[in-house]
Amino acid sequence: MELTKQEQAMLDGKEGYAVRKSMEILVALGEIFDAKNLIDVGSVQVAGVSYHNLGDAGLEFLDSLAKDGKVRVLTTLNPAGMDLENWQQLGITAEFAEKQNLVIDAFQRMGILVSCTCTPYLIGNLPLYGEHIAWSESSAVTFANSVLGARTNREGGPSALAAAFVGKTPCYGLHLDENRVPEVHVQVETELSKLSDWGALGYAVGKKAENQIPYLTGIKTAQLDELKSFCASTVTYGTKPLFYIKGITPGADKQVQPKETVTIKAEDIKNAYDSINDNVEEIDFVCVGCPHCSIKEIQEIADLIEGKKVKGDVELWVATSRTVKHLADKRGYTAIIEAAGGKFACDTCMAVAPLKGRFKALATTSAKGCFYSRHNLMKTKMGSMKECIKAAVSGKWNSN
Ligand code: F3S
Image (spheres, rainbow, N blue to C red):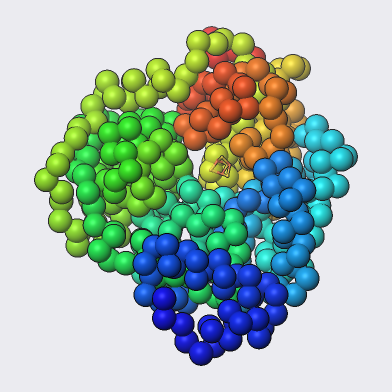
């Protein structure tokens, strides 16, 4: 890979330990993927924030970089393993909280915004069309590539951090036009009537367009929350982190519709629900906000739960960024949800919090949430926001 004089000096250690380590990571990556050079990035999003996944070795690595490493571009964080303020209420142990806080402290010393969200585009890390970025959380990467038209590979935690310290990333993969060409035409021949249908669609597309870039037709309208749900689902269940939807996502009109065609019919959506949903009726955990809730979703939750009570042995978590929660506080939604017994889970999510073995059965709006909760040994049910809130109140799925 060709390096400029300044990049070579960084690699030689002239700008300190963290920058040298970062250059080593970026050059190694660039060589593996045949990148010709490094390119500037407009922003970075770092995943690998939960102590639950990092462990002591990860914490040590971060601490070593934080000694002299400072980020050069806007850098935001993915969810951590706990709500940074309200962890006790969510049943997190003091031992875990202590370690998680050390992780956050290391990131803070690097100059990273402790945003702890997988929807950075809702809170001010909003790349422009065509902008090169280095993001790591898969749903956010897919959203940035597909809905915003920015350009990013799916970075690992260390390579995203390295990009933040250097302000650059190797130019390969989805940074290049030739790798952003759609590979399979997905003809959607069914209506999508609720938010979770988009998660089911993502499942179906993921299975039919595995490891490819889909070009979807037949979808007439889409809202932001629906697209963020689809982004999370399609990449979790198999596609590359980029798709086009004719008439909806930017750049779709410039692409040629691929010849290979698969169709998605009502039965594919039904099959997706059948695969995602377990045979379970009693629900003890309801978690909405995967990806993190927008203010509109929180408004919907408040409207649905106002005047009701979450059942005694059920937990309802509303996962969102702290920034969006501040809006919810101002609008009075937080007070309504908390009066009903719901809890806000800011800065964290059901996949990265240490939940293994704690709950038996989850109800959620999210196909991705179901995927990861099965790893946490939960049975899963996916449905609309209305069905989820109903489950929180009754402790049962589809109760009357
Ligand atoms: Fe976000 Fe966690 Fe879901 S990172 S996309 S809420 S699994």
